[in-house]
Length: 483
Image (cartoon, rainbow, N blue to C red):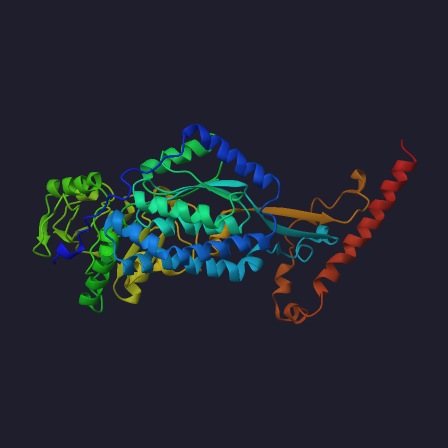
């Protein structure tokens, strides 16, 4: 693999990210809280306007964002469009299409099962959390900053956004985009340096601890080691290997779910040295996949396979976040699953094999997400939740799940004013609130036959109406003739 044509020599645009003064961050947060309290984001049409403005800015600043990623990590425009900018544009379009539906209150029948609620109505309203903080990551800067921002704004929140200072050019480009196109009353950007965070588990614990001091909710996408299980009954080993390496080498392996002619560079010298230290300490067999060797000056590490890796190897101690793929051989499938289950739940798990085998693997493991006979592509499914479990993350987002993450689901019960039951005659023992004993009748053939008319509600209401009249008259009598 030749790497000469992908070296970027001009990286002198901005050497250091301008930082927001620490003493001004508190004032920014207070401004966002005050704006939320004033009802700035209450109107859904205004939220749509913000999303449309963000979409316009994304398209008009596309080349700026592509150039920023190229300067930060030598990523090609094609890869940035496919993995970073495209998902943001799709997310905006999805919210503009479905936001009215997702914001609508959920309503469920009450009296059909709990007759005490015959004269009541209840709904679950989707209300914004308030002011949220989004701390983005550097590996896919547009996606990991703007996708959660879309969900937060659509749900009616005001936002304080902090891009990662590791990818300097991208942080500046995103800050300029948000500042130029979005209303400063609803989102502000802070540089340098509810919470939404994407990144390492170590920093995630710090974020969670800080949020806990304010009783604030968190959504953490943390990552971890995402295992790939390739079983002997895989139908096409060559195709499986190609998909695995494609997923692994995306962004030079710098993805949370990681397992071209324009080959991405490692983000900085510190990460380059960290990955090389893992390789230098491994006891496995390093298999060179090309003629090129590591180059610190260019922050280049070629695609690297390491065979014969033992469970205690340095490569398995933590997330690699680089173009290195360790290989462990197993004899029976349960041996591999025992190894996976003895470690932290990963953000993603990949299974290659027959339908029976992949289902067995997925059913007997735990992970944030799982993919059968493919790698990485579950992140492209915007109608499904993306997130971790346990050490790999808290919460989920994408599409409707982002809207729900940034919303408080508020239960609202509306009751008709009626006489309360007298204590002396309250003999039902809460039977009107309990799940009905005869519910099986409603699932029978004749029960379903009455679906087109409120038969069961009418039947159940007879007793409630009668008792309400009796209890109400008794209560009235008690008030008129107190003992």
